[in-house]
Structures are given as structure tokens and as C-alpha cells.
Length: 393
Figure 1: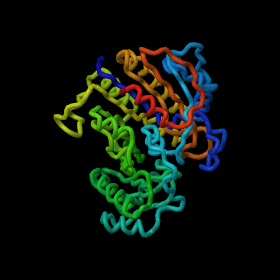
Figure 2: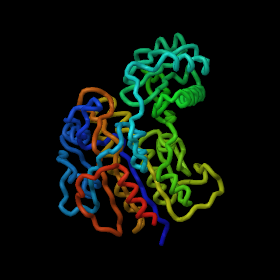
Figure 3: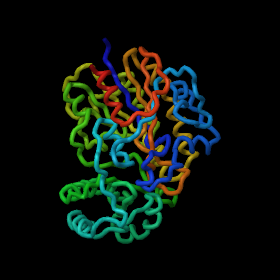
Figure 4: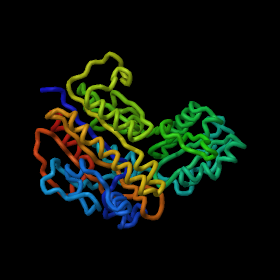
């Protein structure tokens, strides 16, 4: 048998309906990211995912319910207590969190901030409040330039975010400060999922975040199926922010991206066997068996459009992703597996700019298997691990 590949493409935040406990997470039962994005745009053109069966998962304007889809679809219901990137991805990889990560709706404790200031030598911080990232850098940019203090903020998610203008303070300094924050949070048992580096520059007179230079510093997961794959000799290729989400645990190769298009192009190259793996390997000259997991995060839907309440941009991003589904399928061999899913919601059409507690789509395709239509609701994003185990037997 030829080398077997499994491809997981996570369309970040493309939820398909509120979970029953959504109110416990501050969300309304009406939240449904894909439904509202499709409706706002008077329909979406996603013929390739439509052909695989996406339309069977809900009444999404413009997405037909294909009678005999080529793929198999289901609605996945999260087991873990959370609605964030780390929780969703870890569960996709088999790690279910019984307790949620900690959030800080009133900002971080002063004791932590004091240690951060002391150990980074940054002189002070601005904000230390929950905030929209785009708004807070606009509000505090002038003060940031005057004081050279970093902007520290959080959100409804478990995140410690550090923003600064990299024309004022070097990017590497930002990364170093993030690593110090990660260590302090771990040492103090603050249970914060991610420290996020939020670099920006002044472009056309406006503070603008630089997506390609963003980095996430996650807690290290205890153990996931990625570790099992790596230990078995398989290649585990992280594209986008996968490396950061898993803090490199269980990953053998990784490459960051600056846009969905770049991530999709790299995914296609990986499926074709054209990705220069020697350049992105953690361990040079290591040999691997014939199994490969390509794990891609497509973040633009969430970062650029969901959090910014931009359903038009969100819709265009979904349509762009769909254009790559066909060439990826064409590049797959008979036994390769493609899974398209999401990690949570971020409905741009409901009040607020935070993630939404939603169910997610599961779309599966293999050339050697007939589609099975809609399997209904399945408890656990970790259902994906069961499919991967069957694939890599």
C-alpha cells in the first residue's frame, strides 16, 4: 500500500449551532456561525463541501442538501468545558478537559503583573483588562509609543495577550516577554491556556496587527493521540498555529502561516508530497514509517472576521477554503483520509466579539469508501481520533 495520509483541516470557529449549555458560557441559544454567515451573504458558494454533504448538517442558505453525498458528515458535540482554540483542538486530538481553563474577567492579579514587569524589565504595562485586540491597540497606541509599555489584555477566553508595535520594540523581545509570561503563569498555577504575541505596525496611519508574526504559547497537553502517532514513527505535520496550540508536543514537522491561502497552499503541497519536510523537521535525518498526519488550522475565519463581526469577510474566507477542497481531493490516493471540521464558534452576527459555544461540522472523505450521508450528532470532537486509529492500523 502507498503511504497513507490523513488530513485534518480545522476551519477555525466555523460552528454550526449552539450547544445546550451555551448560556453557561455567556452565549445565546441563537448563535450559529455558519447559518448566520450564509444568511448574511444571501448564500455561500461552496460546491465542493456541498458535494461532500455539508448542507445536510443544517439549513445554510445557498448550500444544497445533496441526496447522495460523496462524503460522510456528522455534527460533533464538545465534551470539554470550554469554547476556545486550545480546548477544541486538544479534544480533536483526544484530550478531553473536565475542567475549563481559567479566565480573568477583571484582568490579571497585580501580583502576576508585578512579576511580569520585574522579570521582563518592560517598565510597566498598559490596560490589563478584557478587550477587543483591534480596539485596544487603537485606543492605547499613543500611550504605548509614549511609555514603551506593552499592552496586556485578555478576553472571555483563557488568554494572556501582549501587543506592541514592532517598529518600537523588536519582535524577538515580544516573543521573549511571552515566554516569561508563560513561565510565570505555569509556576503560579494560573491555568491560562495561551499566551499570545500580538505584534502590530502602523500602516497607513493605523495600528494594524501582523498575522504572520503572531505566536501562541500554550500550556503543554498531558498526552494526545499526536504523541501516539509520533511515537509510532509517523510524521505529524502542523500547518498554521498547530505547533503553538500543542506546544510542539506530538509534532514532528511544523510551519507557520500568514494567511488561510498560505495554509491551504502548504496543505496541498503536503498532500502531493511536495512540502520540503527537511526544512521544517524538528529532528533532522530522522526516518519515518509510511503514515502521515497533516493537521492544518485555518485561522482567518476566526481572527480576522469572527472576532471583528465581519460576516462578509467570513463568508469569503469559507468560499476560498472550498476552492482548495477539490485539488486536495484530487491529490489524495485511494486510502488517504480527509476530515474537515472546526474547534468552536465565533458568530459574527450576535452581540459581542468572543467565541461562541457551538457544535462543529464533521466532514469525512476517502476515495475508496462510499459516502454514508449524515450520521447525526456524535458526542465528542475526539470521535476524530477513532477514525484516525482505523486509518493508521
